Length: 79
Image 1 (cartoon, rainbow, N blue to C red):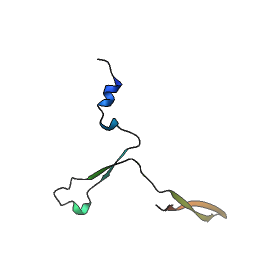
Image 2: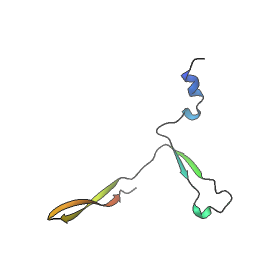
Image 3: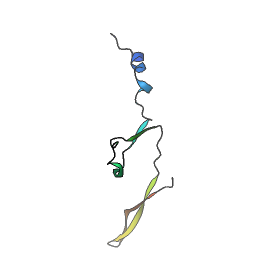
Image 4: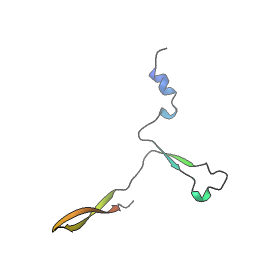
């Protein structure tokens, strides 16, 4: 039997894995671990994700009479 790409694609629910689809899992909090449904976790499917931009502010230190910049505090942009 010859391989047929159309038959293969028709057997994939939702078209298979894609680079722009994400599965987000939120585990059960530790405070609720004593309950019967502790193994349950929330699972969502997402199409996009947004990560806030960040910058590292330099810290200038005097090192043998020369100003040297070292990485300082990390600051995040507003959401």
